[in-house]
Image 1 (tube, rainbow, N blue to C red):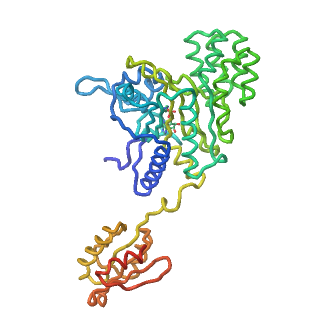
Image 2: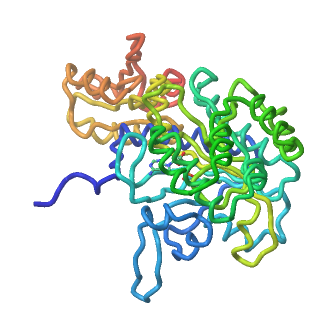
Image 3: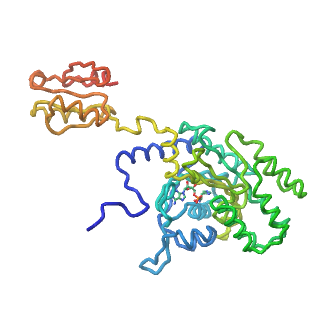
Length: 430
Ligand code: HAM
Protein backbone atom coordinates (compact mmCIF):
# COMPACT_ATOMS: atom_id res chain seq x y z
CA UNK A 1 0.00 0.00 0.00
CA UNK A 2 1.21 3.50 -0.81
CA UNK A 3 2.00 5.67 2.20
CA UNK A 4 0.07 8.90 2.65
CA UNK A 5 3.00 10.41 4.51
CA UNK A 6 5.52 12.67 2.75
CA UNK A 7 9.05 11.38 2.08
CA UNK A 8 11.06 11.13 5.32
CA UNK A 9 12.38 14.48 6.48
CA UNK A 10 10.12 16.51 4.16
CA UNK A 11 6.86 18.24 5.00
CA UNK A 12 3.40 18.67 3.53
CA UNK A 13 2.26 22.22 4.05
CA UNK A 14 -1.46 22.11 4.78
CA UNK A 15 -3.17 25.53 4.79
CA UNK A 16 -2.35 26.10 8.48
CA UNK A 17 1.37 25.46 7.96
CA UNK A 18 1.41 27.20 4.59
CA UNK A 19 -0.09 30.33 6.14
CA UNK A 20 2.73 30.42 8.67
CA UNK A 21 5.33 29.80 5.99
CA UNK A 22 3.99 32.61 3.83
CA UNK A 23 4.05 34.94 6.82
CA UNK A 24 7.68 33.98 7.47
CA UNK A 25 8.70 34.47 3.82
CA UNK A 26 6.87 37.78 3.61
CA UNK A 27 8.64 39.08 6.71
CA UNK A 28 11.99 37.97 5.26
CA UNK A 29 11.24 39.62 1.90
CA UNK A 30 10.24 42.90 3.50
CA UNK A 31 13.33 42.93 5.70
CA UNK A 32 15.72 42.29 2.79
CA UNK A 33 14.01 44.98 0.68
CA UNK A 34 14.31 47.38 3.62
CA UNK A 35 18.10 47.03 3.28
CA UNK A 36 17.98 47.50 -0.51
CA UNK A 37 18.73 43.85 -1.29
CA UNK A 38 17.61 42.45 -4.66
CA UNK A 39 15.96 39.03 -5.12
CA UNK A 40 17.57 36.20 -7.11
CA UNK A 41 17.06 32.47 -7.58
CA UNK A 42 18.88 29.60 -9.27
CA UNK A 43 18.29 26.02 -10.38
CA UNK A 44 17.38 23.13 -8.10
CA UNK A 45 20.10 20.97 -9.67
CA UNK A 46 23.79 21.77 -9.91
CA UNK A 47 26.83 19.72 -10.85
CA UNK A 48 28.28 18.00 -7.77
CA UNK A 49 31.67 19.50 -8.68
CA UNK A 50 30.32 22.91 -7.66
CA UNK A 51 30.00 21.72 -4.07
CA UNK A 52 33.16 19.60 -4.13
CA UNK A 53 35.18 22.74 -4.73
CA UNK A 54 34.60 24.44 -1.38
CA UNK A 55 31.64 23.23 0.67
CA UNK A 56 33.47 20.60 2.73
CA UNK A 57 33.57 16.88 3.31
CA UNK A 58 30.49 16.51 5.56
CA UNK A 59 28.21 17.99 2.93
CA UNK A 60 29.72 15.94 0.11
CA UNK A 61 30.23 12.62 1.90
CA UNK A 62 27.15 12.43 4.10
CA UNK A 63 24.50 14.91 3.11
CA UNK A 64 24.29 15.46 -0.61
CA UNK A 65 21.49 14.03 -2.77
CA UNK A 66 23.40 13.18 -5.93
CA UNK A 67 22.81 11.06 -9.02
CA UNK A 68 23.87 10.61 -12.62
CA UNK A 69 21.40 12.20 -15.01
CA UNK A 70 20.45 10.56 -18.31
CA UNK A 71 23.42 12.24 -19.96
CA UNK A 72 25.84 10.82 -17.34
CA UNK A 73 26.33 14.18 -15.66
CA UNK A 74 26.89 13.84 -11.90
CA UNK A 75 24.38 16.27 -10.40
CA UNK A 76 23.00 17.16 -6.98
CA UNK A 77 19.86 18.70 -5.55
CA UNK A 78 21.17 21.93 -4.04
CA UNK A 79 22.14 21.37 -0.38
CA UNK A 80 22.99 25.07 0.06
CA UNK A 81 22.68 28.24 -1.98
CA UNK A 82 26.08 29.92 -1.60
CA UNK A 83 27.88 28.00 -4.41
CA UNK A 84 25.01 28.77 -6.84
CA UNK A 85 25.14 32.40 -5.77
CA UNK A 86 28.92 32.52 -6.30
CA UNK A 87 28.48 30.93 -9.75
CA UNK A 88 25.89 33.56 -10.68
CA UNK A 89 27.91 36.47 -9.27
CA UNK A 90 30.98 35.19 -11.16
CA UNK A 91 29.02 35.74 -14.41
CA UNK A 92 28.11 39.38 -13.81
CA UNK A 93 30.31 40.92 -11.13
CA UNK A 94 32.51 42.82 -13.56
CA UNK A 95 29.62 44.92 -14.87
CA UNK A 96 27.68 45.11 -11.63
CA UNK A 97 27.67 48.10 -9.29
CA UNK A 98 29.32 47.11 -5.97
CA UNK A 99 28.48 46.12 -3.38
CA UNK A 100 26.15 43.50 -4.78
CA UNK A 101 23.39 42.79 -2.25
CA UNK A 102 21.16 39.83 -3.08
CA UNK A 103 18.65 37.66 -1.25
CA UNK A 104 16.75 34.45 -1.93
CA UNK A 105 14.59 31.87 -0.12
CA UNK A 106 15.44 28.54 -1.81
CA UNK A 107 14.43 25.06 -0.67
CA UNK A 108 17.47 22.89 -0.03
CA UNK A 109 17.91 19.17 0.52
CA UNK A 110 20.41 17.44 2.79
CA UNK A 111 20.39 13.77 3.71
CA UNK A 112 20.32 14.20 7.49
CA UNK A 113 18.82 12.18 10.28
CA UNK A 114 15.50 13.94 10.80
CA UNK A 115 15.24 15.35 14.33
CA UNK A 116 14.06 18.49 16.09
CA UNK A 117 15.41 21.42 14.08
CA UNK A 118 16.88 19.26 11.30
CA UNK A 119 15.01 17.86 8.33
CA UNK A 120 15.95 16.70 4.85
CA UNK A 121 14.23 19.56 3.08
CA UNK A 122 14.21 23.07 4.42
CA UNK A 123 13.81 26.60 3.10
CA UNK A 124 16.63 28.98 3.81
CA UNK A 125 16.65 32.78 3.76
CA UNK A 126 19.98 33.74 2.17
CA UNK A 127 21.34 37.28 2.25
CA UNK A 128 24.80 38.02 0.86
CA UNK A 129 26.91 41.05 0.03
CA UNK A 130 29.81 41.02 -2.44
CA UNK A 131 32.44 43.70 -2.83
CA UNK A 132 31.86 45.78 0.30
CA UNK A 133 34.92 47.55 1.67
CA UNK A 134 36.45 46.98 5.10
CA UNK A 135 34.07 45.24 7.45
CA UNK A 136 31.02 47.20 6.30
CA UNK A 137 29.52 44.13 4.61
CA UNK A 138 29.85 42.11 7.83
CA UNK A 139 28.29 44.93 9.82
CA UNK A 140 25.33 45.29 7.47
CA UNK A 141 24.73 41.54 7.27
CA UNK A 142 24.68 41.22 11.06
CA UNK A 143 22.41 44.25 11.41
CA UNK A 144 20.06 42.79 8.81
CA UNK A 145 19.87 39.53 10.75
CA UNK A 146 19.09 41.41 13.98
CA UNK A 147 16.45 43.48 12.13
CA UNK A 148 14.76 40.34 10.88
CA UNK A 149 14.37 38.98 14.41
CA UNK A 150 13.07 42.35 15.58
CA UNK A 151 10.57 42.35 12.71
CA UNK A 152 9.27 39.05 14.05
CA UNK A 153 8.81 40.76 17.42
CA UNK A 154 11.86 39.14 19.05
CA UNK A 155 14.40 40.88 21.28
CA UNK A 156 17.63 40.15 23.16
CA UNK A 157 15.76 37.95 25.63
CA UNK A 158 14.89 35.56 22.83
CA UNK A 159 18.05 35.14 20.74
CA UNK A 160 21.79 35.73 20.65
CA UNK A 161 24.44 35.94 17.96
CA UNK A 162 27.66 34.03 18.66
CA UNK A 163 30.54 35.34 16.66
CA UNK A 164 34.17 34.52 15.90
CA UNK A 165 36.72 35.25 13.18
CA UNK A 166 38.54 32.60 11.20
CA UNK A 167 41.31 35.06 10.33
CA UNK A 168 41.89 35.51 14.07
CA UNK A 169 41.92 31.75 14.69
CA UNK A 170 44.27 31.26 11.72
CA UNK A 171 46.78 33.65 13.26
CA UNK A 172 46.60 31.63 16.50
CA UNK A 173 47.13 28.36 14.59
CA UNK A 174 49.98 29.97 12.72
CA UNK A 175 51.55 30.89 16.07
CA UNK A 176 51.15 27.24 17.13
CA UNK A 177 52.99 26.25 13.91
CA UNK A 178 50.31 23.78 12.86
CA UNK A 179 50.36 22.21 9.41
CA UNK A 180 47.60 22.88 6.88
CA UNK A 181 46.22 19.37 7.39
CA UNK A 182 46.22 19.80 11.20
CA UNK A 183 44.46 23.15 10.89
CA UNK A 184 41.79 21.56 8.68
CA UNK A 185 41.24 18.74 11.23
CA UNK A 186 41.18 21.11 14.21
CA UNK A 187 38.53 23.26 12.53
CA UNK A 188 36.34 20.18 12.14
CA UNK A 189 36.92 19.26 15.81
CA UNK A 190 36.09 22.77 17.05
CA UNK A 191 32.94 22.76 14.90
CA UNK A 192 31.80 19.59 16.67
CA UNK A 193 33.12 20.51 20.13
CA UNK A 194 29.79 21.77 21.54
CA UNK A 195 27.96 18.65 20.39
CA UNK A 196 30.20 16.14 22.23
CA UNK A 197 31.27 15.68 25.87
CA UNK A 198 34.74 16.50 27.18
CA UNK A 199 36.05 12.93 26.96
CA UNK A 200 35.07 12.68 23.29
CA UNK A 201 36.65 16.06 22.62
CA UNK A 202 39.90 14.97 24.34
CA UNK A 203 39.88 11.81 22.26
CA UNK A 204 39.51 13.75 18.99
CA UNK A 205 42.29 16.17 19.95
CA UNK A 206 44.45 13.25 21.14
CA UNK A 207 44.23 11.63 17.71
CA UNK A 208 46.03 14.64 16.23
CA UNK A 209 49.17 13.77 18.24
CA UNK A 210 49.98 17.39 19.04
CA UNK A 211 52.62 18.53 21.53
CA UNK A 212 51.35 18.89 25.12
CA UNK A 213 51.91 22.65 25.15
CA UNK A 214 49.87 22.98 21.92
CA UNK A 215 47.01 20.98 23.44
CA UNK A 216 47.08 23.16 26.57
CA UNK A 217 47.00 26.31 24.48
CA UNK A 218 44.19 24.96 22.31
CA UNK A 219 42.10 24.07 25.35
CA UNK A 220 42.71 27.48 26.88
CA UNK A 221 41.45 28.99 23.65
CA UNK A 222 38.33 26.79 23.65
CA UNK A 223 37.47 27.96 27.17
CA UNK A 224 37.45 31.68 26.35
CA UNK A 225 34.10 33.20 27.19
CA UNK A 226 34.20 36.88 26.19
CA UNK A 227 35.74 39.46 23.86
CA UNK A 228 37.80 40.71 26.83
CA UNK A 229 39.21 37.24 27.52
CA UNK A 230 40.02 36.82 23.83
CA UNK A 231 41.92 40.11 23.83
CA UNK A 232 43.88 39.18 26.97
CA UNK A 233 44.68 35.74 25.56
CA UNK A 234 45.93 37.22 22.29
CA UNK A 235 47.97 39.96 23.92
CA UNK A 236 49.65 37.34 26.16
CA UNK A 237 50.64 35.48 22.99
CA UNK A 238 51.89 38.74 21.43
CA UNK A 239 49.19 38.53 18.75
CA UNK A 240 47.23 41.72 19.50
CA UNK A 241 47.77 43.07 15.98
CA UNK A 242 45.99 40.15 14.35
CA UNK A 243 42.83 40.83 16.34
CA UNK A 244 42.56 44.57 15.73
CA UNK A 245 40.29 44.36 12.65
CA UNK A 246 37.92 41.99 14.42
CA UNK A 247 37.82 44.43 17.35
CA UNK A 248 36.89 47.30 15.01
CA UNK A 249 33.81 45.34 13.90
CA UNK A 250 32.93 44.22 17.42
CA UNK A 251 33.04 47.85 18.63
CA UNK A 252 30.28 48.73 16.15
CA UNK A 253 27.99 45.81 17.02
CA UNK A 254 25.15 45.90 19.50
CA UNK A 255 26.44 43.86 22.49
CA UNK A 256 22.89 43.19 23.64
CA UNK A 257 22.75 40.63 20.86
CA UNK A 258 26.33 39.66 20.04
CA UNK A 259 28.71 37.59 22.14
CA UNK A 260 32.05 35.90 21.55
CA UNK A 261 32.18 32.12 21.17
CA UNK A 262 35.52 30.40 20.38
CA UNK A 263 33.68 27.26 19.20
CA UNK A 264 31.93 28.99 16.30
CA UNK A 265 34.03 28.21 13.23
CA UNK A 266 31.30 26.86 10.85
CA UNK A 267 31.31 23.51 9.09
CA UNK A 268 31.55 24.81 5.52
CA UNK A 269 35.07 25.23 4.18
CA UNK A 270 34.80 28.48 2.27
CA UNK A 271 34.66 30.87 5.24
CA UNK A 272 37.81 32.93 5.71
CA UNK A 273 36.84 35.75 8.08
CA UNK A 274 34.05 36.59 10.49
CA UNK A 275 31.78 33.62 11.22
CA UNK A 276 28.61 33.62 13.29
CA UNK A 277 25.58 31.61 14.30
CA UNK A 278 22.31 32.73 15.84
CA UNK A 279 20.78 30.73 18.66
CA UNK A 280 17.46 30.61 20.42
CA UNK A 281 17.86 31.33 24.14
CA UNK A 282 15.22 28.68 24.77
CA UNK A 283 17.42 25.63 25.49
CA UNK A 284 14.88 23.25 23.96
CA UNK A 285 15.57 24.75 20.53
CA UNK A 286 19.26 23.83 20.53
CA UNK A 287 20.13 23.88 16.83
CA UNK A 288 21.36 27.08 15.19
CA UNK A 289 18.70 29.34 13.73
CA UNK A 290 21.11 30.90 11.30
CA UNK A 291 24.71 30.55 10.19
CA UNK A 292 26.95 32.72 8.10
CA UNK A 293 30.19 34.48 7.63
CA UNK A 294 32.70 36.07 5.30
CA UNK A 295 34.31 34.24 2.39
CA UNK A 296 37.05 35.94 0.41
CA UNK A 297 37.90 33.38 -2.26
CA UNK A 298 34.74 31.69 -3.48
CA UNK A 299 34.89 33.27 -6.94
CA UNK A 300 38.34 31.84 -7.53
CA UNK A 301 36.85 28.42 -8.26
CA UNK A 302 35.57 30.03 -11.49
CA UNK A 303 38.99 31.54 -12.24
CA UNK A 304 37.72 34.96 -11.32
CA UNK A 305 39.71 37.44 -9.21
CA UNK A 306 38.79 37.34 -5.52
CA UNK A 307 35.72 39.31 -4.52
CA UNK A 308 34.95 39.53 -0.81
CA UNK A 309 31.59 38.05 0.10
CA UNK A 310 29.69 37.82 3.36
CA UNK A 311 26.26 36.44 4.12
CA UNK A 312 24.06 34.11 6.07
CA UNK A 313 21.51 31.34 5.69
CA UNK A 314 18.55 31.21 8.07
CA UNK A 315 16.39 28.08 8.02
CA UNK A 316 12.62 27.89 8.33
CA UNK A 317 12.59 24.77 10.56
CA UNK A 318 14.35 26.19 13.62
CA UNK A 319 12.82 29.61 12.98
CA UNK A 320 9.32 28.09 13.16
CA UNK A 321 10.22 26.40 16.47
CA UNK A 322 11.62 29.73 17.66
CA UNK A 323 8.47 31.70 16.77
CA UNK A 324 6.15 29.09 18.26
CA UNK A 325 8.32 28.71 21.39
CA UNK A 326 8.22 32.45 22.13
CA UNK A 327 4.60 32.92 21.07
CA UNK A 328 5.58 35.24 18.23
CA UNK A 329 3.15 33.97 15.60
CA UNK A 330 0.35 36.56 15.27
CA UNK A 331 -3.23 35.39 15.71
CA UNK A 332 -4.11 36.47 12.13
CA UNK A 333 -1.54 33.96 10.84
CA UNK A 334 -2.71 31.10 13.03
CA UNK A 335 -6.30 31.31 11.81
CA UNK A 336 -7.72 31.78 8.31
CA UNK A 337 -9.09 35.25 7.60
CA UNK A 338 -11.55 36.49 4.98
CA UNK A 339 -13.69 39.60 4.75
CA UNK A 340 -17.05 38.15 3.70
CA UNK A 341 -18.66 34.72 3.79
CA UNK A 342 -21.22 34.92 1.00
CA UNK A 343 -24.24 32.77 1.88
CA UNK A 344 -27.89 32.63 0.82
CA UNK A 345 -30.91 30.88 2.29
CA UNK A 346 -33.09 30.67 -0.84
CA UNK A 347 -31.68 28.40 -3.50
CA UNK A 348 -32.74 30.80 -6.24
CA UNK A 349 -30.23 33.34 -4.91
CA UNK A 350 -27.19 31.37 -6.12
CA UNK A 351 -26.74 33.35 -9.31
CA UNK A 352 -27.02 36.80 -7.73
CA UNK A 353 -24.74 35.72 -4.87
CA UNK A 354 -21.98 34.68 -7.28
CA UNK A 355 -22.41 37.88 -9.25
CA UNK A 356 -22.22 40.09 -6.16
CA UNK A 357 -19.28 38.18 -4.70
CA UNK A 358 -17.31 38.99 -7.86
CA UNK A 359 -18.24 42.67 -7.60
CA UNK A 360 -16.89 42.75 -4.04
CA UNK A 361 -13.69 40.99 -5.17
CA UNK A 362 -13.30 43.68 -7.82
CA UNK A 363 -13.18 46.09 -4.88
CA UNK A 364 -10.38 44.07 -3.27
CA UNK A 365 -12.36 42.29 -0.60
CA UNK A 366 -11.69 38.61 0.07
CA UNK A 367 -14.97 36.81 -0.41
CA UNK A 368 -15.75 33.12 0.04
CA UNK A 369 -18.79 31.93 -1.93
CA UNK A 370 -20.89 29.14 -0.47
CA UNK A 371 -22.35 27.13 -3.37
CA UNK A 372 -25.56 25.87 -1.80
CA UNK A 373 -28.19 27.43 0.46
CA UNK A 374 -27.07 27.43 4.06
CA UNK A 375 -29.33 27.27 7.12
CA UNK A 376 -28.78 30.15 9.54
CA UNK A 377 -27.42 27.98 12.36
CA UNK A 378 -24.74 26.65 9.94
CA UNK A 379 -23.85 30.13 8.66
CA UNK A 380 -22.25 31.18 11.94
CA UNK A 381 -20.34 27.92 12.35
CA UNK A 382 -18.90 28.13 8.83
CA UNK A 383 -18.12 31.84 9.24
CA UNK A 384 -16.19 31.16 12.42
CA UNK A 385 -14.25 28.30 10.88
CA UNK A 386 -13.29 30.40 7.88
CA UNK A 387 -12.42 33.48 9.95
CA UNK A 388 -15.01 35.69 8.22
CA UNK A 389 -15.56 39.23 9.51
CA UNK A 390 -18.93 39.56 7.76
CA UNK A 391 -21.58 37.23 6.40
CA UNK A 392 -24.39 37.76 3.95
CA UNK A 393 -27.97 36.57 4.23
CA UNK A 394 -30.37 36.35 1.26
CA UNK A 395 -33.66 34.67 2.22
CA UNK A 396 -36.81 34.48 0.09
CA UNK A 397 -38.05 37.90 1.30
CA UNK A 398 -34.77 39.58 0.52
CA UNK A 399 -34.61 37.92 -2.90
CA UNK A 400 -38.12 39.14 -3.77
CA UNK A 401 -37.12 42.69 -2.78
CA UNK A 402 -33.66 42.49 -4.40
CA UNK A 403 -32.07 43.05 -0.98
CA UNK A 404 -29.21 41.52 0.91
CA UNK A 405 -28.50 41.53 4.66
CA UNK A 406 -24.89 41.92 5.73
CA UNK A 407 -23.93 41.10 9.29
CA UNK A 408 -20.84 42.17 11.16
CA UNK A 409 -19.94 39.02 13.07
CA UNK A 410 -17.91 40.83 15.68
CA UNK A 411 -20.30 43.67 16.64
CA UNK A 412 -23.42 41.70 15.54
CA UNK A 413 -24.61 44.85 13.74
CA UNK A 414 -26.54 44.03 10.56
CA UNK A 415 -27.79 46.17 7.69
CA UNK A 416 -29.90 45.70 4.59
CA UNK A 417 -28.66 46.86 1.17
CA UNK A 418 -29.98 46.80 -2.39
CA UNK A 419 -28.26 44.29 -4.66
CA UNK A 420 -26.80 47.07 -6.79
CA UNK A 421 -25.61 49.29 -3.92
CA UNK A 422 -22.08 47.89 -3.96
CA UNK A 423 -20.57 51.20 -2.78
CA UNK A 424 -22.52 51.16 0.48
CA UNK A 425 -21.73 47.48 1.05
CA UNK A 426 -17.99 48.11 0.56
CA UNK A 427 -18.28 51.05 2.93
CA UNK A 428 -19.98 48.92 5.58
CA UNK A 429 -17.48 46.09 5.29
CA UNK A 430 -14.63 48.63 5.33
P1 HAM B 1 24.41 26.30 7.20
O1 HAM B 1 24.94 26.58 8.56
O2 HAM B 1 24.71 24.97 6.62
O3 HAM B 1 24.95 27.45 6.24
O4 HAM B 1 22.86 26.50 7.22
C1 HAM B 1 22.30 27.72 7.66
C2 HAM B 1 21.03 27.47 8.44
O5 HAM B 1 20.13 26.68 7.66
C3 HAM B 1 21.20 26.68 9.72
O6 HAM B 1 21.57 27.52 10.79
C4 HAM B 1 19.80 26.11 9.91
O7 HAM B 1 18.91 27.09 10.41
C5 HAM B 1 19.37 25.83 8.49
N1 HAM B 1 19.59 24.42 8.14
C6 HAM B 1 20.70 23.86 7.62
N2 HAM B 1 20.54 22.53 7.44
C7 HAM B 1 19.28 22.25 7.85
C8 HAM B 1 18.48 21.06 7.92
N3 HAM B 1 18.95 19.89 7.52
N4 HAM B 1 17.23 21.14 8.43
C9 HAM B 1 16.73 22.33 8.82
N5 HAM B 1 17.42 23.49 8.78
C10 HAM B 1 18.68 23.45 8.31
C11 HAM B 1 24.78 27.49 4.89
O8 HAM B 1 24.05 26.75 4.28
C12 HAM B 1 25.51 28.64 4.24
N6 HAM B 1 25.45 28.43 2.78
C13 HAM B 1 24.90 29.95 4.66
C14 HAM B 1 25.55 31.15 4.06
C15 HAM B 1 25.02 32.01 3.18
N7 HAM B 1 26.78 31.56 4.32
C16 HAM B 1 27.03 32.64 3.63
N8 HAM B 1 25.96 32.93 2.91
